[in-house]
Length: 166
Image (cartoon, rainbow, N blue to C red; front, side, top):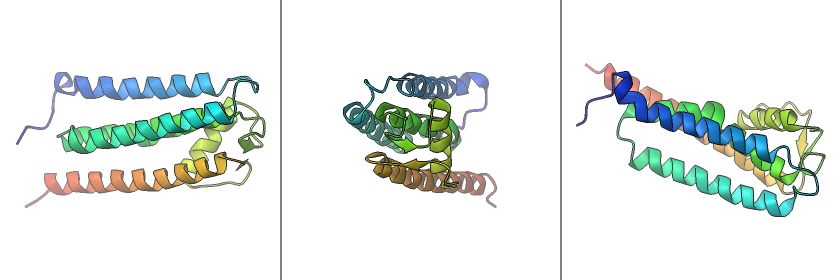
């Protein structure tokens, strides 16, 4: 069994991976949420949705099969849960277009990001509502939020139990 990482040098690859995920998701949101209404739409939104699905599947596979350290998995899951997944969903909403084409009541990139976090955490204030194809996307975001939170808590409890066993 491999030893858990303890030094900054041992965490370097994990920190770089997390930083890369954060930057990629930020730039995806920044770029796609600022598209003109003539560019955004169902076709681009559908391609962005497929890309998001493939990213989530590939990351899940990577965490489950390639990352052997529970601490690294927990850290990467935390970064994904807090920042990456909501930003990527917001990018997809932006690809569909935000002036009532995807989220009724959203008037800009900040509103799309806010809606994504509210949906991901399943808070659902009701001040904005998805429409059209984005309704299915919002449901999948809420389910993803439930699943990621459950996996994150399970990983944290398992790590705690492993480190504090008799």
